[in-house]
Image: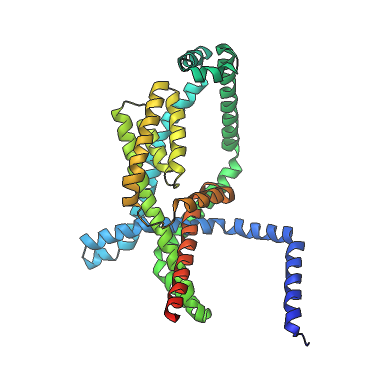
Length: 373
């Protein structure tokens, strides 16, 4: 039996390619990392442009709605861009103004921990028989209070040490500031000429990809819809949750209402697990003031999140993500392992896009199969 040369050539070629990749893996990885580091300000700039564009487009729609003079329409893009960036700067400024003073006060409270105060809290907790049995394994009240105080001081000392090292690293700060500046300037260029860039991209795809151009346009559209829907829906939902948290805490006279509300709104940008991260940080902050108020806060937030999950989230976010909760959790876990907080944020819309693409492909195949039958 005659064997075609291609049957031997292709496996041999694939084997040598795989061998070459494995043999030069370290050098190749270093080269790719170097390229990515060099391009990181521009990648970050493109990401900033995508997010700012959502706000800028909203301002442009308002501009078109209320302004019709041809002279004023000429400045629509630059004015909308300035307002969009100003909005983000204002939000960051507001967060720091609200959160920083309370965080500093909490750190001071932790630094001034008195073992006698901890002892009093432990006595209060020990009224519960189950808790007292658990605490008995650690020793007496005095020993436990010293243990907690010692660990608290160690953690705070480590935190202050890291903070000092960061603040004294002038070179690192200067490099970071330059990268941020380049990213912001690049994002402005992208936003100013987004229509031109879009036309050029479409032209390149149509010219060089031929029959695959339609598929590429479809994939880009899916990615855009999922990322846009995720950022808009998740941001609105986070703002509502943070506002309700702050309002409820104010009514219940729980301390740090504004700070905890802002933190929960910020962490709620991460689906599923985000609000729980915010609640944990908020509980630790409130514990520096009062144990009873911390317990009231936990009960209040649990009830609020039940209401938010069943009423607000489906109405605000709806099907913008289009991903079942199980897959959202998987995306967050894998994203966190690969890219930290940024990975958690982008993993959900990426997996949602893949999920939608597979869903569309299965539907197409099933339709073709039914038509043949």
